[in-house]
Length: 555
Image 1 (cartoon, rainbow, N blue to C red):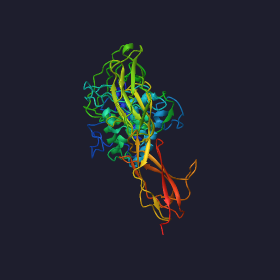
Image 2 (cartoon, rainbow, N blue to C red; image 1 turned 180 degrees about the horizontal axis):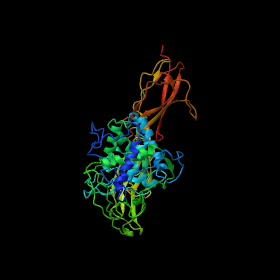
Image 3 (cartoon, rainbow, N blue to C red; image 1 turned 90 degrees about the vertical axis):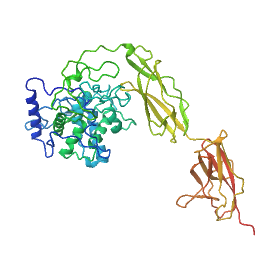
Image 4 (cartoon, rainbow, N blue to C red; image 1 turned 90 degrees about the horizontal axis):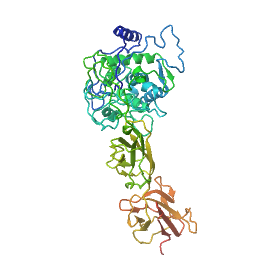
């Protein structure tokens, strides 16, 4: 899942020596099971679709940061063991990023305890993939302020991976790019994506979602990450390169020796992210810069997502002019969508529509927009999809497919976002109301009688309609009521029985069938003779009152 452009281990003539000393120093002091299980091992073979294979690595073998941690570890003998609460030391991890790693560990400990995922492993991978989400540059929900994108995987110096998501995640509809702080390629995210912050979305640019997805990916195939061999296979399945394994291992051991929380946005970031050309600009705003060179320890290093990668020749990123105002997406807004209301099971008459505008306030075409349904609902777009990605037309607008209500009533949200951009989402509130009926009547006119203490021989059956048409799935309440101007539930006379055989005189869990009819459960008479009333009321206010008579048989 390497997401960022690779850097050399160290600059200068001592590069190889320093790197070797760093790895040796960290490996020499690690506990049992921490040594590399194999110098040339591959990832797990996929079994029953459970574990990613070596040629299906999460990141597509895109570049990664190869800087190693300091030789002086946080608890090296002779150094202070009292770590600061805040600061910018290498051992510091931004607050939201650290919280995401620990939350992912806790979640997987509940769902897959046998995996024994340590959050420090997620931290190590996050460090080499994105510099801990660019030093913790995330909002309050854990989403990066701008997308973190790897280079275009077009086979020119990297793997060739053609587009698999129509640009929904990476903004590229021709080739794939690794996305987010944990650098998943879109096809891998489609399988392993998670909702780690419980906002109803699976966003690779959100550190909580990405960390939980990475945890599940590493735990695939019944791995036990407390075992060195399984841990090595897991890391290699993320990026199939021995150099990648050694780099991740170095940071993993470093973080296990101690780390601390620093404020979001203050974490240590590789210089290539803080200065010069940003390696991960918003898609579509400027050409992708040529990535810096990366070390070449293996003939064909690889990474999570599929394909193999060859190291590009060292080159200097060309300067790119800023995008023209007419080509820069500045705003995404509601394009006049009206109230979104529908009855359960029906299609919403209103269609969701948004408009993209450039920096001059004019319509902007060819902007990728993703519509996502969120909340406790079974509503779906036409075709059964909960998310769709479309492109704006020449007038800058794009309309979502027809939205169809499910059976779950209440409110839910539909969000429209500019795919791969950091602009705020346009949110729409949709409401699903219960099915209604404006009329209800008995299907026959038989007299309903019973002897005291007996049951009524004939069942009560009614039919509901709405504007003359069959009203199926309509909620109905049945109540034995008293006489008078303000009827209340009767405490004597006919009654129903609940599942436990107890006497009840109100039933609420009733619905008409596909034909709009409802057949009530058996009705019983108590020992009090007389004439009583049964009232049926539908969702929508339709009412019918039925007479029930309790009398002794004629002599």
